[in-house]
Amino acid sequence: MMRILQIAGARAMGGLLVHVRTLAQGLIDAGHQLDVILSPDPNVDHLAGQISDAGATVHRLGVRGKTDLAGMRALKRRVAAVQPDIVHTHLSSPVEATPALLAARWAGRHRMVTTEHAPKHAPLRRFYSATIKQALGRSLDAVIVVCRADAEYLVQEFGLDARSITVIHNGICDPGYPAPSRQEARSKLRLVDETGFFVGYAGSLSVQKGVRDLIDAARETDIPGLVVALAGEGQLRVDLEAQRSELPYRLELLGQLPDIRTFLAALDVFVLPSHSESMPLALLEAMHAGLPILSTDVGGIPEALQDGVSGVLIPPARPAKICQALHSLWSDRGMRSRMGAEAQAIARQRFSATRMVSQVEVLYERLVERSR
Figure 1 (cartoon, rainbow, N blue to C red):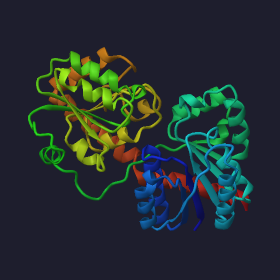
Figure 2: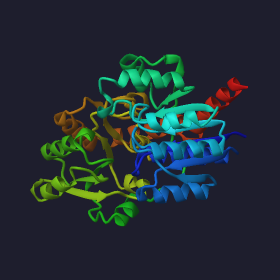
Figure 3: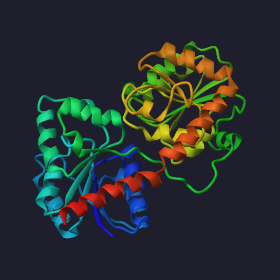
């Protein structure tokens, strides 16, 4: 048994905190003693309760940047009190996580791991980013990335030592109960037109996620009964609300949903039009649901989907390509069925929570053995 401390500084629910919850549950089930430091932001309260109920000791504190000396001291004291074998940070990048990483390192002798969830995040591309990443990389015992594309990026753009990087793909939990039928799901979500062709997206409603590309592409299709359903919130919500009455198809803005499986069960096709990604959980959820998927070929997505076999891959920021692919999927029910089945088989084999947790556990054990 190892004593493991996870640190996640995110102040709103999203893929990073879902990943932390999944990893925490798996490590507890494997018999390890787990402490988790989460932001005190109220947006994280529900997740904190879930992780606590799973059996972890949850601490609520944060370090807000390099000038937050009180936060750094509090984190240092907490890490020292826990005395973990492993400290694993889940912050978007070592550049942003510098204060938290330093505080954890100063707290004592333990193995330090970080997961790079978003190494291509635009604000991290500052003139000093490479220097900081390299310096912090030398202080870490391991860097986890969620796709090979991110590993290559960190080596090429920031000069990280490839030997310090481990690729561990994200994984999805089996909830242990069947998803609702399509009719049940649409009824639950109040999507009353049961005969329409439902195309869905789940994630942030933002330009960089390609949401406008999807909206524009759907405008140019001639698919009868087309419904575009968006699950999530973001900067485009107000504009999309204003646009709805002008669109030649039905646009459903469902907001942040507590149950992504019900949303996916309501769809005919899942679309991920992002301009940049790593290994998005929404994609893996759609694969597990057995949906045909239309996605851009960015980041780690081609590591999960094979174009023409388990999905349709297109270049980013090309609404015309989305339009063409949607029409092909709508017109060929057999192709949708084959692609969905293939994607589901791949997801169950390669992108399960059990597999992800096992690979992280093996890495931890190797680091602990090295320190003895």
